[in-house]
Length: 271
Ligand code: AMP
Image (tube, rainbow, N blue to C red; front, side):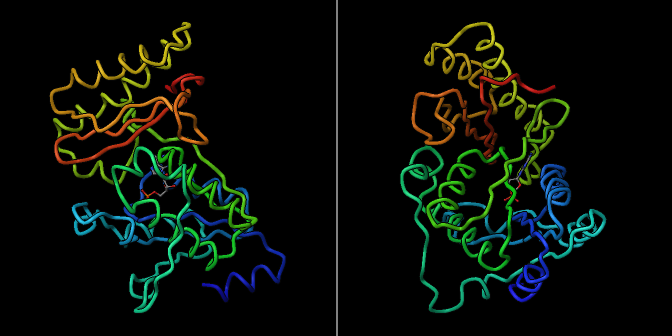
């Protein structure tokens, strides 16, 4: 990959990178479309990064649809699809890891130990391998966005981190590869995440600024859903991920599936 990227750079072409773990959906494709409109050349990486999964997580059964992914990316007109193997990314002896620090510590960072170290390491490697001007990430993974922005700045990458809005289904459910795990009843229950965020954005717009009442209202909606079990629901600052703030962030188990979602309450909820 590095050879092609170096050649494009020598030719003065701009490069956009969209990192993904495959099982592509309209959320991923919105990042791809933005990358295509902003850059001369677009690289999409498809790599299920083993080091960002915990030992009891879903690495083994993570959804995969390589043929369909390639078809979607070809249709979208991307210039390269980078699909490294785990053995090529982490050969015997590889031991370097990127640790981002504070912003990676709360919430996802504390409930998924090692997760952001895995994410930061693979993102640093992908940036080095593809030499992009811009890299595209979804607001859906809000803490990942904050971690990647910090990393890009702290490591002097010079890469512009572009954040694209969360793509949702008609009922508000944020698109996610993990939605494939949900049965029909669970799918309905999963709408409680976006329902609670919508309620909070509306309450905030009507003047409710009390963090604990907003949080309580979100929890009331989630806890009313029998299939949902809340891992966290917090209001944090979108850059530091410390409290207080207007970014409502959720992680909720729907049966055996862990879903995340978020919304900045200072913005109207879409749809
Ligand atoms: P993943 O394949 O889940 O690692 O996601 C790859 C990229 O797509 C990440 O930057 C995600 O934040 C982004 N993404 C995932 N779901 C959505 C969505 N519903 N809307 C926008 N971006 C998304």
